[in-house]
Image (cartoon, rainbow, N blue to C red; front, side, top):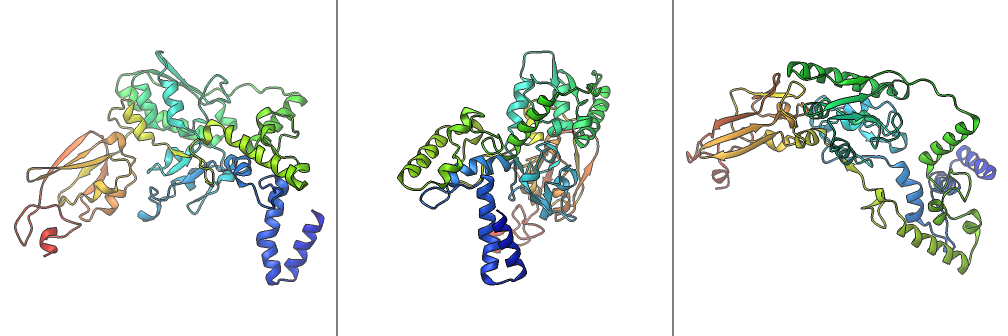
Length: 415
């Protein structure tokens, strides 16, 4: 390694085409091999399937779905994920999975559900709420070992309202104060908004467990055990465990230094057997990842859709929309809405626009892009249906749905 660093320094001082090739391609590969993210087999090729699971899948915790992201459709651009992330995992709209701490705040504030994570928030939350009990306790696995929920940063006021309107809710955020203050502030703000709505509806407020847990005394053994677990979570189970016999699952497909340096048929058979065993023993969260895929199976979580599916009723925690005069029934807002809060249909010669406040995230996309500026965000949300007479074509006189601000139907435009 010292020789490699000296060579890197030499090539940086005396730039040349070979030095650029060395610094950009060769040296990063050497460091990746030393770290265990790439391993070389006897056939002088990189076994990317196995080592991507050990390195890349562990590190890629988030992904941004560019097709759903509305950053470039708004002025000024949406910066919700960048502003809320306490670890700086989003920079200029580009996610950095190695910095992600899986707090869930980005999924809570994203108005278009464009952030994909490896945590199945919908399934875990549904399992907790579906329990046959009159009360629900929402706590992360760190504060309550028997809980199946991850960090509670993904919770929104819409989700809390959907649950609290049917059951008593205990929200444990005491440990968040010391663990992640940003998550604590987010949950306290969301809980306060829900308490106002619950009071107006005559229901009991949320039971907010905000007492910070007593400090625990750790022995030296506990400290190093925690250090080892964090290293495993960060770098992959086989690489930072500190030994080959740490776990049977890691040892089943871990290739040691001797195997990496060996050559010939024996090393090739070992590498092939290890790769085949790794294919058979992929964990459940790797389902959906193809053999040559460079991305794990990540899913997006839509908080409004989950709350609406679990019986959320319109309330002050939701956004509202008002329709003013000037709508020409183009339906552009319906096509723009990321969660389907707006729906349209034709009834006779009328254009019927329906609004579902439980699905609205107040992203402002419909109000900003309406060609007639006929939509405005408002208060006191309720489900609404507007009936707008269809305009008539200036050429043929037939009712039609215009494209933008056009005054001629499509049939006449194509003549």
